[in-house]
Length: 134
Image (cartoon, rainbow, N blue to C red; front, top):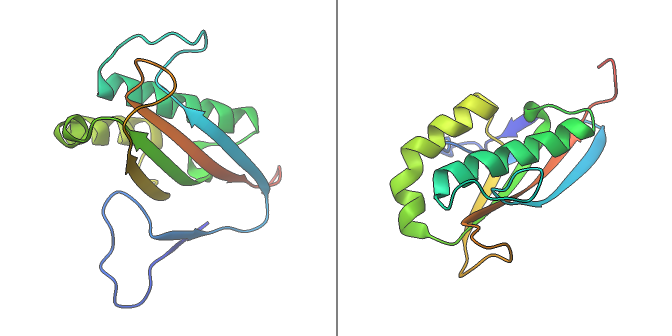
């Protein structure tokens, strides 16, 4: 996986502008909210929901034989921009705990609501899992 940075561009912080991958198994992860395997929210707060949603994304990728570093794109949908901005330091700690220093191509979209209540954030992702033994 190669991080793409056009010549002369300032490197982004916390994401990549683009990712190029070699052939592998494409994994498309549906939107994951901050509920557990039994579809129960443990918290109505943004940071714990983000933590669980990211864990859910990683679990789906793992079910395909992948690891967090195989995630090449994440789109986040969030219902509360002020809460997101206030939680950024905590979200960064959660990110580093689950993803390390791996920053895929990412988009953040603020929306009025999510289907699953009391969801505050939803993450969808794409991963490319290399063939076994590579």
